[in-house]
Length: 80
Image 1 (cartoon, one colour):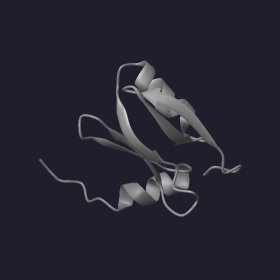
Image 2 (cartoon, one colour):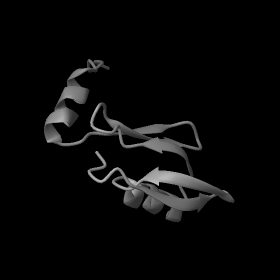
Image 3 (cartoon, helix red, strand yellow):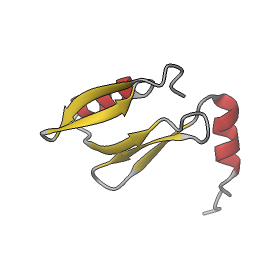
């Protein structure tokens, strides 16, 4: 969650994008590493954050370990 409710800006694919400051380092690292992002939100303390990737995948960001386990329990493991 953005404690300061601040926004950082960066250029992605030639366009200026506003990024929540609390997840800015993750978004920057992904883009600097060649993984293009197309959208992101920290969740603002109301839901998990997310980062949408240009290839169609989406990363979900848990605020902490407890929230991560709650997200994990929302999915049943499939036996193979």
